[in-house]
Image 1: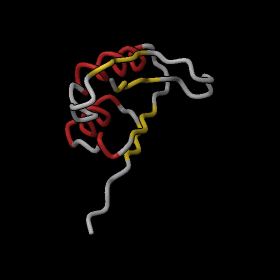
Image 2: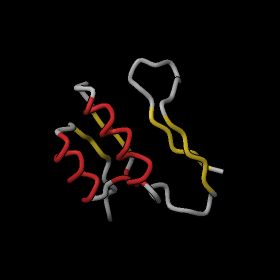
Image 3: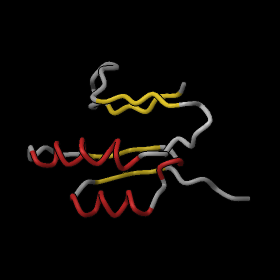
Image 4: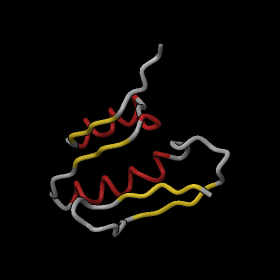
Length: 81
């Protein structure tokens, strides 16, 4: 099983949300159901939210959600060569 998790910065490994899934699915499968509620929650609390992810999350719809919510984001993008 692989897991996705969200943790606050400087949290020493504490996480806010975890999802276990089979190892044969793409890392970003179910991203909206996993990420959107927690991002909206913290934005709604008027907290500064920043999102950083690996290349699996280089998804235009995710970028659009971050921009809609006013969240700064950084995502790795794979180089094709």
